[in-house]
Length: 189
Image (cartoon, rainbow, N blue to C red; front, side, top):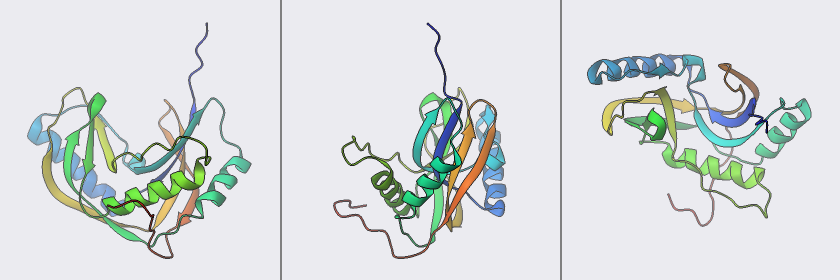
């Protein structure tokens, strides 16, 4: 039996600006120097916070599929907001991540909003993951620790097409953040 692995992934994300990417890479370097942590760095141009994983497939998405996703995601309204990560730790499978701090509730609210407009009403609606940014993959586990805060203002949501195993991320759609504060009944952050 031949196992066919997905080659293409789509996800919505928040992408840090260039100045913030420099600060993130600097903090990653300092963490590695202080702790002896080694591993495969996430490329600077791939640094992001995943808001919603749309799915994986064995074929690239069509322009019609991308347009439909963007159109549905337009129903999620939120103003620009500040993100400020204040902690680092290792997650399962050795992913060193930034997490915690200002903007986490906004990230979760947008993630839930995307889930609500992208997932069929009768489908099981899994909870969003805790907002984080993966910096590198390592076999060494780093316990939670405080870091110098890294902050930026999220001004848009980006639909990313990742070519799995090839190290390529394509930004195939952008949604500016504007409008009212997103509020979701029944969710208390």
